Length: 128
Image 1 (cartoon, rainbow, N blue to C red):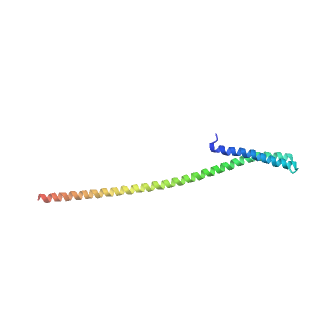
Image 2: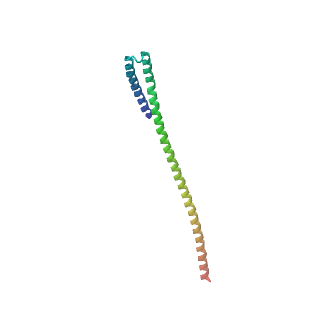
């Protein structure tokens, strides 16, 4: 089963085959009537036009389609790299925040201990 985007290339190839064969037939018939081309060579020319025009146009359309896909994939890879950078930055910010929280917890614990010592020394001073 052909994909939907390949059908456009196939339809274009069929029309180019019909058009190419018709154009070669018209040109060849004019050359045969003027005696510049033999009938046998005319038949081969029309056959070659029919056999080559369609597949060549199909191949060109498919190459264009593949090129566009490769550009889209390149853009996607660029976006993924930007996303990875954003994730890395977010992780480093998270780690920095964790280290700041740990430092603040240590400060609070130290100040809490200092307050307890102060309160104890005040209460011991009142009892004496």
